[in-house]
Length: 232
Ligand code: CA
Image (cartoon, rainbow, N blue to C red; front, side):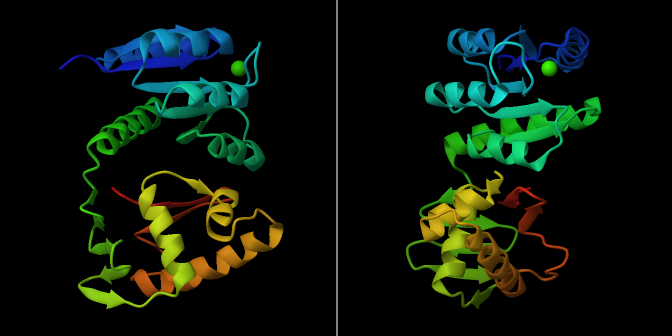
């Protein structure tokens, strides 16, 4: 099997070298870009398997780099940034980032995120979790054709909106969906009120499908950002 190629877009030389060393030690191939423009052009010429992207670049804003790359490719993008504001995280996710890691981070954490991103891009290609219009993960079973949800072998009755939220999350399993994205998909709008309703629907949905709603197994909260359906 050929080595997986990771593209690092980072203007800070020390961090770039640090990440490169860690990845090459783990037998990944690495390409480095210093600017956003270079990152976009290397994405085109090398088709990397994962991109690690710093948001604070010298030429283009990292968010614009995400937008540009998304016009070209579905490659998993892990944002690596010193910025901790939720607003930026939300913006990155809304524009198609797959994951987010805040500096300073440990190499162990970074490598774990890279592995998850690679696994997702592979599982999305073969779509092994959604088969024959069904979704299955750890005793949660969704039959999209019959709109049926089964947890621990018991059928759960969901309201239409609860079902729509759950099926949206399963469709993008493993990926963080922002409040705005979910509201837009479910209600067709992004007004403030929907975020509040979303929280209410999420609470009732969790009460129905989670064994311990306060310590959920399926629907994970990304504080200040959104939700994701766990798939590992
Ligand atoms: Ca930077």
